[in-house]
Image 1 (cartoon, one colour):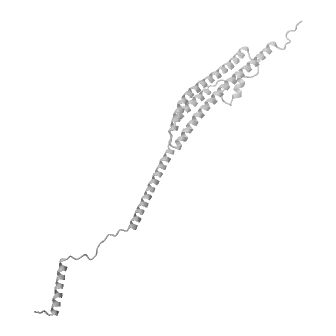
Image 2 (spheres, helix red, strand yellow; image 1 turned 180 degrees about the vertical axis):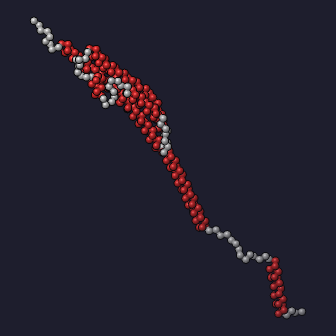
Image 3 (cartoon, helix red, strand yellow; image 1 turned 120 degrees about the vertical axis):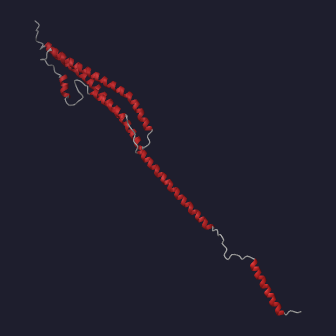
Length: 247
């Protein structure tokens, strides 16, 4: 039996449609929108460069803060002071020298009244009205003054020698603090301490020289006065020279 061509075509189309429908049911459909990760090298490099610059800025700020902290520490050291316990000992030794200088007898270490004291001991003229006993007393007073001056000079010398021995220990302590000085202020203070010790020693030398020269001056004045008195007494003893006329 022959099937008409038209009916054959219709049946074929229907069969193809049915197979397509079944295929649609069996095969899963693909997603409508695919999600893909996109890597941009240029953007990534820019982000790394920005992070590196930010880290460098942070490091610079940290170093700046460290430098400021160190500067504050140095300033604190420069303002730190050191003790000077030797100043009391130096002052006391100078006071001891002053006390010895104040014990001068006969002629004091004072400008006021110096001329009066000197003329009283060394009148430079022979008092004929003075008795022999008075003359002996005056000469004895001058000799005692001279001996007291030398005794005072020896006392000052002894005190200076003792002070020099103590100054050696003082110098060691000052040098030790000077070497351990941390800041500019401590170094300057240590220098001032050394200058104070030097000034104290110079004062001692000046006082010693003053005592020594005073003793020598008193001795020379006593000798000069003794010569004046001797010549005057000789003249008084001889008289005018006309007391005896040979025949």
